[in-house]
Length: 382
Ligand code: NDP
Ligand code: MG
Image (cartoon, rainbow, N blue to C red; front, side):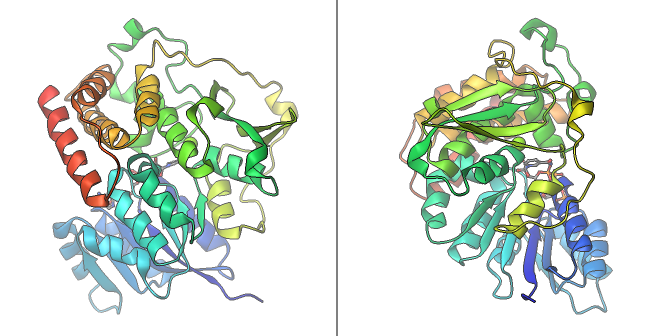
């Protein structure tokens, strides 16, 4: 029997992180959890660390890390403090796979750290590719990277055994979010609670808001552009409210392969570990007779301006996606904190993009400098 895969789960207290640990719990003979990290949730991290018998944990929030130290006093679990300690877990010698489920551009350094140390990177943190796509992909040439985002896992699986040159288009599916069918005017007064009520997926708050503005699909187009080396013209976004087709790949001979399945992130998370094999399903199979029909429609670019803004940032390239992403993260946090309205999100993103002078993407430090400039500029606009 092959030895267990030793995994580090970054962002283990979040939606993806907790589902990853459900898989680890189901397959103790295949997966060994070695390290865990989060931002400030010391209580849950301490519970997880004890339950899985990990050797190392880290919290980026220093006050919370001090609390975690006292919660784990008397154990031999090593506690790291600060963002650098979280990143350090990505390159530990006794880790084979790093699952990056941090949220936002804060995940970039961990993606780079994992790939530089030749780990398999199971990537949920799409913002790594949005802000630093070229930097991450350069490193992925010599290391293995498996997407966890459901659409990208679907595309990846459709591409197994195919030649890149035979791909003509990617059909990137979108649920349409909770506000599908509304006009821009109708969106002005929507509340945080309404925006958080996603019809198909239960996810962390940031990505749930991104799904309601369709920014998430724009970020995913940038993610697909980098992961699969396709141009923006080759990426066709299609709204598919049943979220059963996770995405499709169209080939030069007119054949289209689609990946279908339940709307449950445990499937793509598990595949990022089991690849090139497959393990037993974490939930009952889909009954297509119950789904009945599959609908596809054009996205409403007028009601959801974030989608076009993200695509424009992607097409512009260089440092524009980093500026766009930081503006979005800032505006989404303000909306979630009831300090901004729903339509302030596209307004702020558009203004920050308008003020940004694009540079060639060269380094993580440059991305971080642009990220903080864009956050400050966004703050002034809020
Ligand atoms: P959550 O908000 O649920 O979880 C985020 C995790 O990251 C938590 O463990 C949080 O710790 C930690 N974290 C947050 N900020 C920082 C930071 N600055 N430094 C270190 N750790 C931090 O997010 P999700 O699980 O929903 O999403 C994670 C990533 O996966 C995102 O990039 C998202 O786009 C992507 N994704 C998520 C999907 C989903 O279904 N949820 C689907 C596809 C992609 P703490 O709890 O202490 O705050
Ligand atoms: Mg997705």
